[in-house]
Length: 430
Image (cartoon, rainbow, N blue to C red):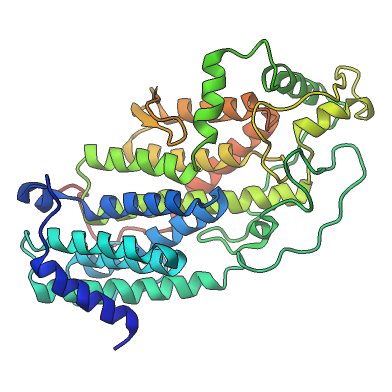
């Protein structure tokens, strides 16, 4: 017996006798959506491990790919992401989902295993109060682990962990330079050559590039971020400052997964359809980030903090240098074009719009600003606010956000059209 299977066997035995947490009723246990429950456990794991956005985006796609293939391997309603359906027909989909999420998270974040053990034991205790028998749960756990092991093995060779290619700093106006708070080569360059989950290549939706430095479009974007994104800006309102912080102090995966969880709950999505939704969202986020970093490395573009200090050499008569200018927030330490937050938000929003409708209203929160909520009339409104936030933070030019939104929308549409295609009918609701 492998160590992983042995651990699951122990947890099955524990779940037979474990009491549900205080305040959790039997009815609540019966109706808990285990896919959403484990997505929230995933986000809590990211927060506890203080994971940066790029590895969090990749990890989210790995976890949700495993959860979908595990659940779909029993229901067999959609084409697989990677692991072909081979589960026992009587296996518990709920146990398979929990096992797949648990196994991938332990593989990716081994230091969080004690907390994940406790989360799995709680999930299994809930399952004892529904119609699943111990044999069905055991089969689901074994199948979920089998799927997760294959997904983890598949993505281990995707290039994310490989050393980035050597980097040489450019010397021309517009070339990226080190920004305050960092040193050395730009971070996460290996994303540019990471194998996507769905795209045919990282460059599949590469944008055309930033406008010429001497163009009117460049000058307009330059002056906007200079005026509104500076640390001491007198034009930026307090609400705009909050907007910048709202979208910066949390990972895009956490922000958009919370929206997906809330909408899946409101629309009573079942286990399989919830798994499919979250796999779509997280794969779209991961692949859009890969596409963004392909472009970042291809164009190697300077950040506003560099551009504003060196406007005297950009050849544009409508830009003026200010060597004392600093952004509102600390600039991420990698190239500017295109905007990562704008791209991944557009990709996630594209998926959610295709599932729930473009004009869906929703409210969301940011882990970085407890107690602050933002409400939106549509997904496009939220994406537009993300773009505003990146300018207001002093991180990006407007054209970088605009081009990233197009990239993200293309990625989302492609992921939705090519993955997890329907093979039989599922109304998607409990």
